[in-house]
Length: 176
Image (cartoon, rainbow, N blue to C red; front, side, top):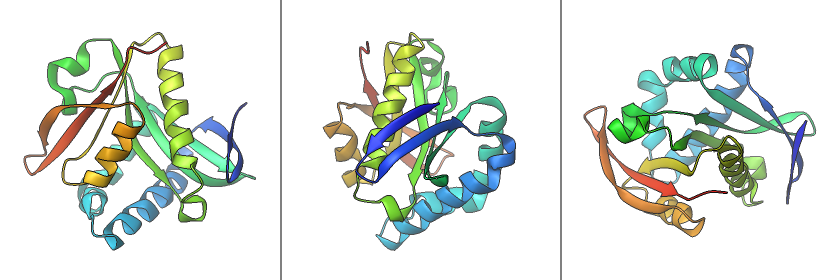
């Protein structure tokens, strides 16, 4: 079992299953509510409009992980091995792993849990032999964009998603 040491305590990491849908969605909805309360409704519409279908697909076809503290779920993220929806042809180049849907519960907020989860995802991508870690964030969420830059990701431009919002593309590498 993989463990991560954080300021909140030691987390265990396990791959989520379809049966974990409600647990993962609860974490993501809490994160969406927190973002909305802080003036950034980027996830609120996503989860209301089509997030449930996307999460179910990710649980079936990608690597969704649950991070637990003393058996209580406190975080989640997804790693995909291709992503043409966001990254176009570049998302099929076989060079990268793609980090999506990272969220934590507020009880561990401010304790660097998200930062450690992100570092673990980058390490996991490198361990699979990929040279690059990629992710995206709503371009208007400048604090989040700066957060990713401070963790070694560089901006590569933007993409228009679902025809109605602009996402900032980030890349970190070479890994390993």
